[in-house]
Length: 296
Image 1: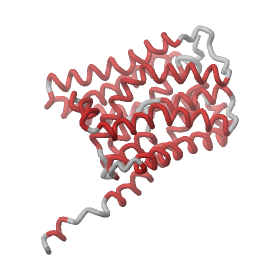
Image 2 (image 1 turned 90 degrees about the horizontal axis):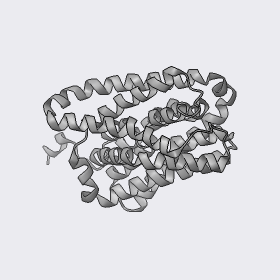
Image 3 (image 1 turned 120 degrees about the horizontal axis):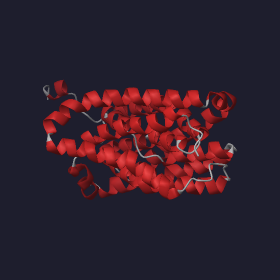
Image 4 (image 1 turned 180 degrees about the horizontal axis):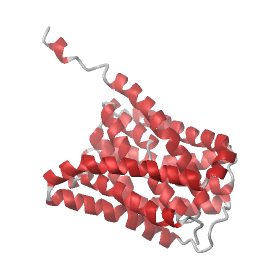
């Protein structure tokens, strides 16, 4: 059985459900149809998110020689889908917000398969000592219940009453942000001894994963000749993961697995914010100010 306290066992799934419902309120069927409208951008972004990021986590865990349980936690973080804050940062960075929303939605659905897959592979690869009763089918069911169900509820509410959903969305997102902070604080508190003992190691590993994922994915997008706006969205999607999902899955197995995601969360908004600022300046270079056009 999990060694997680009751508050984590019950509170974390509830917190994630709020966050996923908030995401659902911002999604429409058109966001998923965009896969066909922007196939190149979506394909590159999702390959980076669903394949490159977890593989980078494997490599970085090996590079830093993380303890098996911490290595598994890092891979779990790398395998988590994109987070909703990536959408906001993409908007602020003058990136392709529609592409960002599409990647977040699709990767959240794919997480039902990808998160258990990489979790199982990392446990085997690093030889982590986790609960004997962990089954991938159980993890799949858990991820399905705490991601797709509330996501579908949010989308259904929006479809039924779009005006009310638009009014509720900002309020629920503020609640979701507060919940996220509490989740991270709880995860840190539950494993404070491990974090203190291994903070330098975890900080280096999580920062390396965060920065490398953003830099490599952005470079791949630009190398594929995607527009700056789409490359910005892809880079930020790789920097801001749904760490609440990683923490929720981790604590359902063993709370020590959640420590890399908790430490990652301490840094990701700072590094992603710097990246978004740089992209804001870059993406604005070719834009002619409105007042300037009046002089032509």
